[in-house]
Image 1: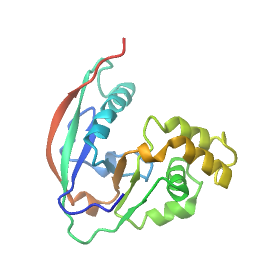
Image 2: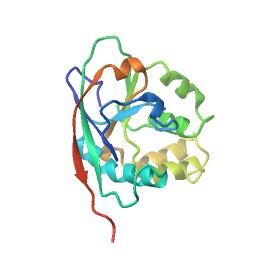
Image 3: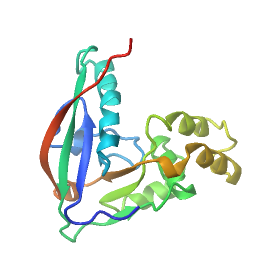
Length: 191
């Protein structure tokens, strides 16, 4: 993985059009902390639409039978003033960053370190990997942070298959993206 370069096209999947993303509406306890998450993979954004609809329906924001969401597209403009950190692979440091943000109090050093950055990028721990991360969090592979538990968890994730994600954590970072448009994505309801 690499840092974002000027002109990069990024995508966001949601139950609604997100033409004006707002950091205050972004959930905390996400992989790289509170922020607006984007990916270079349109396919990844499309796969997130179903999850987003389910979550919004559970919270009463949309009807439980909504069968469509949106992939919004953005263009990144590097104005040279942003601090970026990108995990090059799904390794121990990456795992500890995700766990530290999802479980407050665990790995505080790496959580503090990430506060220095406007944008943090790395592999995505998505809904397909959530069970593995949760098993790690509850000690299912051994004590979190130990070499053996880390190795088992990372091995279960099949990191080479994971897509990317970039967390825009600051207002300064948010100013670097421009909304380009959205496309409605239809999902099939489970029978």
